[in-house]
Amino acid sequence: MPVPKRKRSKRRRDQRFANKGMKVKAITKCAQCAKPIQTHVTCKECGFYKGVKVLVTKSDRGVKRQETQKVIQARQAKPAAEEPTE
Image (cartoon, rainbow, N blue to C red; front, side, top):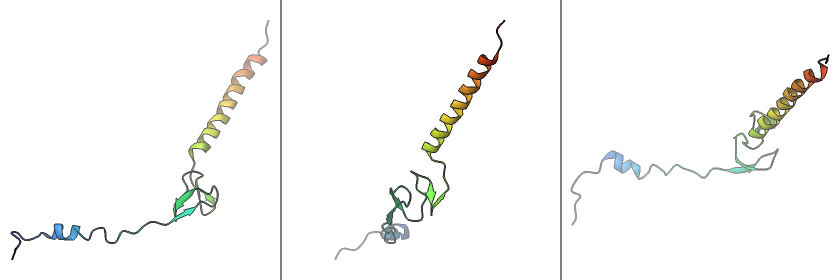
């Protein structure tokens, strides 16, 4: 009858059961944009969590950047038109 040559360590023994408690995470749809997300997690597409905007998304930053560029361009164009020419 075969007999183990060495004692199996606690670490090696316990590694067998390490993944036993893992469960599949639930997936739902975002209430704002209907993208699939995990439950109880902020949507990375629109930045909403439970109907409240909590993240500034990449598209939000792009819109804000365009608005500031328009303001800067308007300021640069305005002084040139106001200067009197003699």
